[in-house]
Length: 147
Image (cartoon, rainbow, N blue to C red; front, side, top):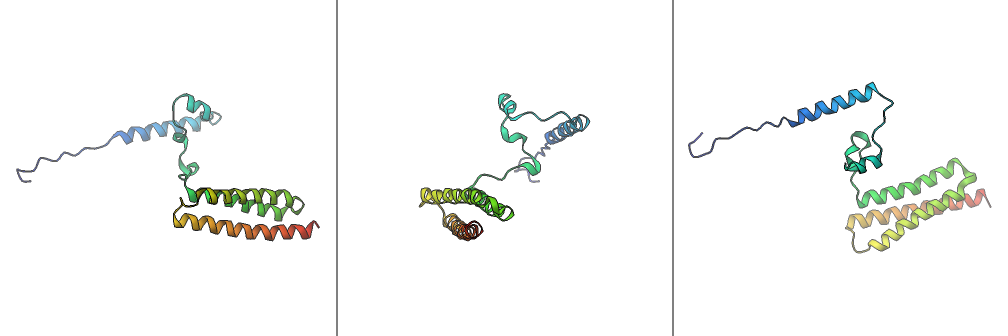
């Protein structure tokens, strides 16, 4: 090293080791006492811990976003259509739920007009178009089953 440059110090972060050891101990205790349940959500808020602290691994949810909102609502409508195929005698109830979900997406489209990116607007428009086409198909199919 040249004499003009200050000497570099290496800092080693050892905190993670104690955190891993604490987690291991917690898992060992859970394995030894499987009847003990995790702290309820209400108790977590009362103790001051954040609700997201308990989410880890496969239970962790993706970040909230407009595409996730549209996808979630569209999935609910599609599930209503799928249920109709398994239980034709309950078709009307599921059609009403699908229509309500599609109408909710339509309200979202109207209320967010001008505030969406081009991709978000296209995604919402495409989802509404596809769901409306499916709704018409299933409504007509239900009418032939239950004239």
